[in-house]
Image (cartoon, rainbow, N blue to C red; front, side, top):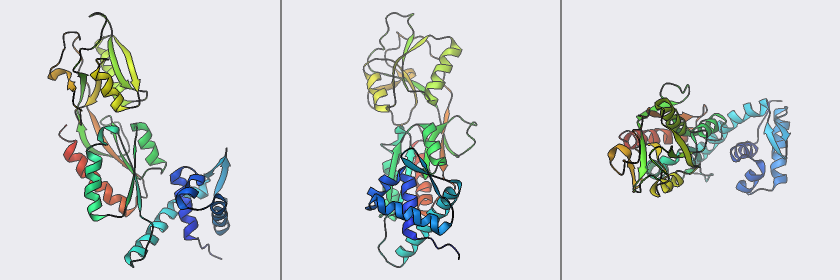
Length: 297
C-alpha cells in the first residue's frame, strides 16, 4: 500500500526540527510529549523506514527523516495555502530570519512593516547572531533566510547585496593608553568574527602593536566600551549610534598612531534550498530594504 502521511504528524516533524527539540515543539503545538511521540512513531510506520535516532536525550533525523522533512515543509505549506484560499482557519505561517545585530534597529523593522502590509498574518521569528552561525543555521534548515557579512569574492554561497567599507571607530572620550608607545586597546567581538580578523590582520601587517581591551558577543557592549574610552573598534558605517565617531572624522586622535586602512566587506543573502513562497516574498522585501538603507553606509 502506498504511504499516506498524516498532515498533523508532518507538521510536528517540521515544528520539532525548527525548534531544535520535539519537547519544545510539543509546548508550541499545545500537545503532550506522549502525543508527539505517537505522531513520530506513526510517521515511521507510514514511511516504513526509520526516520529518527536517539542522540543523548533527544531525537535526530536519519537520512530518510531528513529527506522526508524536505517534503514535509512543502506539504504543510501547500496544505495551509489551500486552507487559506478557501477561507478556512489555519495556523499563521512562520518565517525564520537571521541577521547581524547591526541591522536589528532599522533594516529589520522597515522590512517587517512593508511585508506586513501584504502579509498581515505571517509570524516572523528573528535571530540576531554572528555571521558564521547564521550561514550554518540556514544550511541546516533552522533558518529560512539570513543576511550576513562576508569577505568579497570568498563566499561560495549566498547572493551579494551591497558592498560595505569598513572603518575604525572610537568614542568621544580619549582612548585610554598608559603612554604613546603602549599597544592600541581594541574592543572587538569574540572569535570568530570577520571584523576582528580584519582589524588584527591590518594592524599586524602595518606593525602597529595592539592588545585586546574588551571582547564581547554584544554590539551594544562594543559601543558602550568605546564611549568610555576603553579602546577602538572596526565596523561598517551603518547605524553608528550617537557618541561614536569614525576616527578619520574627528575626535581626540593625538594619542593614537596612524591606523592602517581596512578592507571592505559585502552583505550577502543566504536562503534555504526549499524556501517557501511566503519566505521568498519576505526575502525580496528584505533585500530591497538592505540595498536602500545599507548601500549608502
